[in-house]
Amino acid sequence: MNMRFSREEMATFIVLACALLAIGALYMLTGPTGQYTPASADGDHVTVSGVLLSKKSTRAGGHMVLGVKTDSDILSVFVPVSSDAILMAKSTMPGKEITVTGTVKTYKNEKEIIADSIKEK
Image (cartoon, rainbow, N blue to C red; front, top):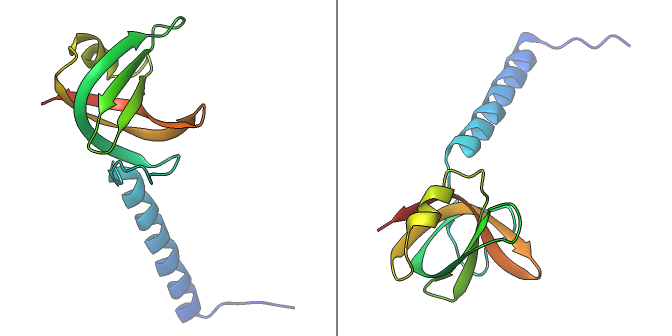
């Protein structure tokens, strides 16, 4: 069986492949998918703002865990020591309003954000 595509079929295939690549690249480059809500799913890249209530270092590794009061609840933010956000996490004092961008993850049946960046307002 000899399958050959016509020029029109081949052109359609190439246009479709390019469109899929463009959509994939746009998805990877657009950054946060939106604001954090309690309905945000693991893997969502989100932004959330709130008041920094607490911060503590982990027992091992030098990571930090922040407690942030949002409009809906108190959210844990995990800041890996390797993250660009670690310096801001260490320098910002409780009571300050911050904006966190990162990825949602469930840890011990509670949602948290793994921080990519933290900005003080």
